Image (cartoon, rainbow, N blue to C red; front, side, top):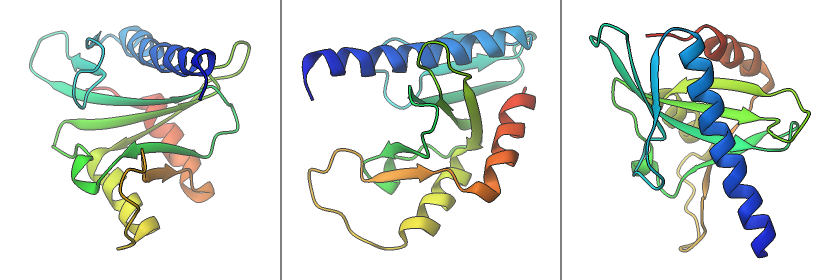
Length: 150
């Protein structure tokens, strides 16, 4: 990967985090991006009365036709607590429609286990476990993102 591509990838990730923060703020939630490289979470969300919260990991792609997102180097790295969620975004290139999909951490782990089973991966591979956008689940995951609130 050359330097320009790396910067573009970083900016797509930043744009994705800010897109999620903006959208959740529009829904009346307090949504705050974490500092760069905070382990596991990109956005912390709190209800206005402070009684509910969620931790969100955002996975972003510039390509509007993306069908998979790298999630974790190991299954143990998938955050799956009661308040852990993943938002997967595609279409963050300029002028594209941004598509969003939401799953909780347990759903992400289940999808990955169903897709990969017990297959082992080469050591050193950067993100061996990816979430694949299944056509049958696409509509539901999009509806879950579009209607999600605390």
